[in-house]
Length: 336
Image 1 (cartoon, rainbow, N blue to C red):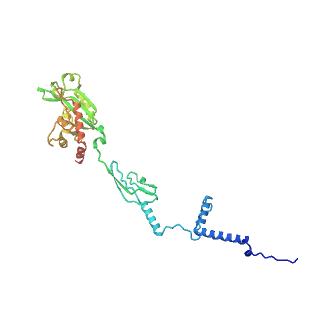
Image 2 (image 1 turned 90 degrees about the vertical axis):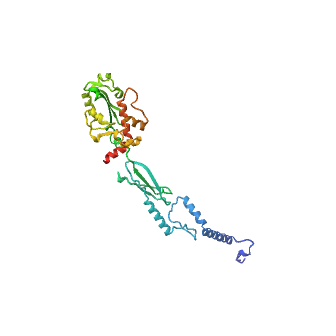
Image 3 (image 1 turned 30 degrees about the vertical axis):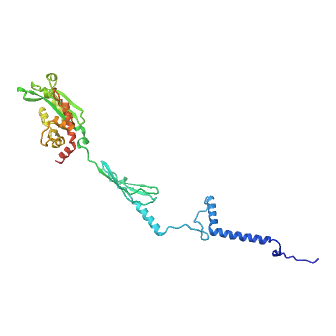
C-alpha cells in the first residue's frame, strides 16, 4: 500500500479550523485590549488594583496612550499662590496695650482664601517677648483686623491712691465767757472716705459753759458732765488727723476750736468750691451752707428738728459732697 500524504485544507472544510479560530480570538483580544488602553479604561482598573494592594510601588503614575493627564498649575498660578502666602504671613493684629482699657474699635479689612499659617503680631508694651504668636486657620483665614484700646481716666485720684488717707471732720461748739461769745469744742466726729465713724466724742471745754447752743449744737449739760477733757481729746484727734487729707465744711472753724492748723495741701473745704456751687445751681461765689448743698444735690434734709445738729451726720454729708467734685477738684489742684 502506497504511502498517501494527506493535506488538510481548512478552507475546504465545513467548519473553521481550530488553529485559525484561536488566532482570530487572539487578534480580537489584542484589538480590544488596545482599544481599552487607548481610552484609559484598562489603566484606571490597574491603578485601582494597585491602590487596593496598599500602593506598594509608589512613584509618578504611568500615563499610557495619551490618557488624560491632570492639569499642572501654570507659572502665573504659582506666582499668585506665592503672593497670597506672603500676604497672609504678614497679616497681623495690632493691639496697643494700656493699663486702663475700656473701649475697643475694630475695622475689618479684605482677605484672600488660603490654608497657610497666619502669624499674629501683638504689640505688648509690658513684655515685648510675648508679642508674636502663630495660628493655622481653616480654609478661610480671618480678615485682617485692627483693634484700638484707649486708656481710661481714673475715676478719682484720692481713692485710687489710698482711701484711708481721707477723712471728713465736723465739730460742734458751745459758748463760754460773757453771754457765751467764745466758742469752745464740745463734740468732735471724724468719718472715713466710706462714711464709717472713726472718732466721735463729747469733749468738756476748758472754761465754764455759759451757752450750750442746743438749738444748733445738739448738746446739753448732762452730755458734758462726764465728757473727756479738752487737752486729752485734742491729742487723740490730732493723732488721727496727722498726715491725712481732711475734708470739712468751713473747716477752718473746726481747726480753730482745736487750736490747730492743718497743712493747706491736705485740706479740702467744701464751702469754697465754685464747681460744687455750679452743680447745685448756686452762684459760684456764694458760700452755701452744708444743709442747702445737701438738699440741692442729694435731695436730702439734714440738721432738722429742735434737737440740733449731729456732727456725725454733717461729717458724712461733707464727704459725700466732696465725692461729687472729687475728680475735677483734684485735677485742678494738681494743675496748680
